[in-house]
Length: 131
Image (cartoon, rainbow, N blue to C red):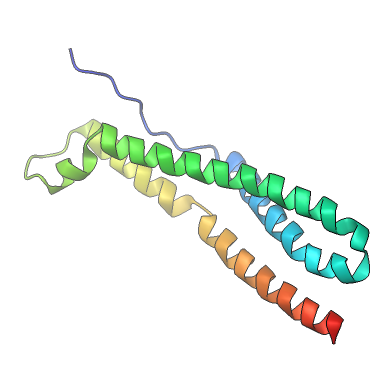
C-alpha cells in the first residue's frame, strides 16, 4: 500500500495578511527605537522587546512556510519527477501548483521592501535628530 503523504495547502489570506502585519510592526518597532532614543528614551526598551517578540513570531512563521514547501517537494520527490521524462500524476501537479501559487501570493516581497524603506527612514531620522 502506498504511503499517504501530507498535502501542501495554502494558508488562508487573512492569516497571511495578519502575519505580514506582525512582520511590519516588528520592523517599525525596531526602527522607532532610533527616534525614541532622541525623543523619549523610556520607550527604547519596550520597543526593543516588541520588535524582538514580533520578529521571532514572524520569522518562525516564515520558517514554517519554507519548511512546508520543502517537505512537500522532498516528500513527493517533486524535483526529481519534474526532471524525469515520465508524466506527472494529477496529485503531483496539484502539489506543484499549490507550492508555486503560495510563492506567487506571498506578500513577503512587500515586507522586505517596507523593511528597506523603514531602515532608510530610520537612518535619515537619526541623522536629522542628531544634526
